[in-house]
Each structure stands twice: as C-alpha cells, then as structure tokens.
Image 1 (tube, rainbow, N blue to C red):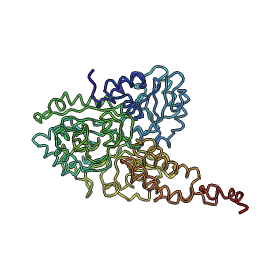
Image 2: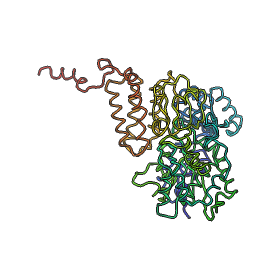
Image 3: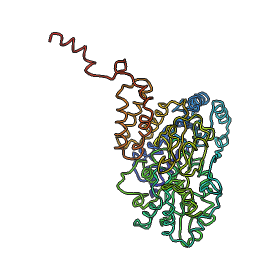
Image 4: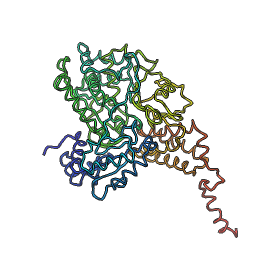
Length: 575
C-alpha cells in the first residue's frame, strides 16, 4: 500500500472527524497505516489542535467565543442559555448526543459579540432569546447553514478622493496584466521601492523577504499566505477574504512570479471554515480565466497554482514556523530560529510567508503604482493600514486609515464611548491609556498590527488582564518551560489581585516573572504574552496599589519562620 504525503494529514483527520463527529481509536489506527507513521504520532498531532476531538461531540457542535469582548457583552448569559436550551454542560454533550457545547478562543467575530460557531457556521450578536430560537430551529431539523448569520462587512472609514488602497473597486486580472513585460527582479524592485512592510505586526520589509527567497538556492519554492488570524480582537483579514478574495489571489501570484515559486498555499484558520466556499469559488474562477494552473495568462510559460489548507484550532500556528510545521502535517510547534523560511521553509524549501493584508497590498502596488501607494506615508510608514475596531464604540468595523492618524481622531471616528483603555494589536500588543490619545498610529509610534479594542471607564482592568492571561495560558503550545509554566504563574498573580490576596511584593514579582517569560520563551507567543500586564503596571500603578494587602493584615505572605514560631517556643521552652 502506497503511503500518503504527510502534508495532507490534517485534511484526512478532518475527513474522518466529519464522518462521525470525532476521531475514534480505529480512525487513529487507520490514519497511521495510510500515512506510514505510528499511531502515537497521529495521536500527538490530533491532540495538539483544539478542534480535533477523541470523544463524541454531538450532531451539532457549538463553540462559544470566550474572548474579553464576549465577556463584556453577555458571555455568561449566553453560556447559560446554551446550557439550558441544549441540555449540554459547557465542555460536554447532552444525554441524547445531539448537542456538544464548548468554549473557544477568539473566532474572528469581535465586531459582533457574543458570537459562536455551530458546525463552523457563524452566529453573532447572541442573546438568550436568540439562542433559544437557534436551538429550537436545530431541533426542528433546520440545518445550521440555514440558521447562520450572514457576515456583511462594515467598512466604516477609508481615505477620500480615490486615495484608498485596499478598500476600493477591484477589477480581476488588472494587477496581473501589469506584470507583463516586467522581469521578476523588476517586480521585487517595485515592492522594495514601495517600502511595503509586513502587515501582521512584525513589519519586516516585504521586498527584502521576497528578494531573499528569489536568491535562495533551489528550483522548488513556495508562497504561503498566513490566514490564521487568531489574535483576539482582529478580523481585518477575515474582511479581506470575504470582500476581496481575488485581490489576495493576485497578490500571491505576484509574489510567486517574483520569487520563482510554482505553488501557493493559503493556511486558513478553522474558525473561518465558513469562508471556504467563497475561496474555492474564487480560485476556480481564476483557473477558468487562465490566471492559475498550467500557465498564467500573459506571463509566458510561468505556472502557478494555489490550494487551501484548513487549520484545526491553534493560535500558535499564526507564528510562521509553527504554521510550517502544521502545513507539513505535524504539531504546530515553533521551530528554532537558526534559519529563515526564505532559505528553508515548507518541506525544507525556500518559502515566502506573508499575511492576507500584505499580499493584498502587494497586488495594489503593482496595479496602482508606487507613487500612489506612497502618497499618504510618514517617514517610516507607507501605504495605508487596515484596522479592525471593536469594543465600547458605536461604529465597530473595518477602518482603512492613513498612517500617522492620531489615536484621538480614530476614537472619534468610531464613536468611542467614554474610553479609558485601548488595546492595540491584541493581547500581545500594547495597552494604551486615553491620556495618550495624541499619539500617532505609525511605525514610528503605535505599531498596530490590525486590532483595536476599546474599553470604557467602567470596565475593570484586572478582568481584562485576567482574560488575556487565560488566553495565553490556554494557547501556549507547551514546548518551552518559560511559556508553559510562566503564563499560569502570571495568571495566578492576577487572580490573587482580583481576590484581594496580593501582598506588597507581588507587583514586583509579576514584573520579574514577566521578564523571565519574555526573555526566555522560544517564540513570539511567550515573548509578548506579558506585554499588557507590564504596561498596565507601569501606566496604572495606582490601580495595583489599591489591590495590595498590607503585611499586617490577614493576607500577609507565608513565612516559614513566623509559621513555626509558636511551635519553636513550645519545643524549646526549657532552652
């Protein structure tokens, strides 16, 4: 029996899970034989991802988002309603095996919380009443797809007078037509001249990355789109996939032509499974028009095609080397950074990895030209930036802003309601006080990867920090000790503060633990997980001081000497 390529292991696990709702022992054994690996290896992969289950999960599997925006907009009421209406406890299945009910990290619907997925179809703006209607509909035999909410993107702001770059009219094939007559080296030079930087948060120069891959040894090269948008509060890439899938495809073709790659892969997070039909339809349309497949129209003998790889629920796979491991059918654990993916990436071959927004921007640069792209820049920031804004504001949604926009203006545009805390770039990003509203969103100041969460003055900062810390504790891959052990310790310290059990030295200890986690973790998850806590301590010291219990109160720290003092007096009385 010929064994299958391991790169399709996740696809096979999904196929088997769809058949019965979970992966049985027989499924694990069967996959091991098909792929020529041990059952233990298959078990290790299946156990790594949140959405693979080894026990029945019901005919209808419900995942309720537990991110902070959901917490603040009715999570507990909605959770109770699901438990009541389905008869399934959180984390379990009802007695009839009809409903399975689980909580999960952010599902990319932060602008319409509370939100849930039922058999991976989206349900938004949930209330107890709406939950009852949904569950009754399912009990009546209606399919989840029929009951699900349509996700219509709300574009709230973009530059005026035709200056928008991403959120403008799209003409399929226009960017690709501009490639005709230009060599790959000229395309890379154009991207470098534009000074486009990665739009995922690291802001690495895109043209430089492509040039590295172009010059790397080897004839087999890959283009990978990181569509594993898992940072809580972020949904900008979702919107681009929903509104402009063709623009992403053209950006990947541009990159493939520039680098010399013949295959592209879109790594799509499982939470966006509902977008698969639209993506597949767009890819097929491009094949029919001659832009994908055996040859690319207008580019001679150049060949390029794209497939979609569905993830299975792991925030860590947003880290590019963990994503590569997942693409190869393995646990999504970050690699050591002793070599760049542009030299040794997918299957050991030179690989370019960019996110959805970056590829879309690259396509627009080829279509509109460098001068247009740089018409609204700051000294270190070119183009525009796509932001997903949610939380305590009247106009959550999508904002394509000019670099250099003041935070105060952005808050005004979205109708922020008595804002006090602003979290940019998700929990791993930067916590900003309303007192900093005159700061600018740019690579020179606030380096925002895409998420802006707004919290009003009535929101409890420690509840926010607790939610963030729970997220990192849950999503840590566990490979390195500082992240695996350090994040639970930080969560414990935050919860002690919430309970009024923190001693005067605990704030300093929290900073010490934060430094340990940041400076010793293997990848960006651990290296950035303490950011919000550190910034909160420095920017709002008075709030932490209020949580501390003096040493002379009952909550004093444990002291072995004081605890054994009475015993020592009794046992050494004659001394």
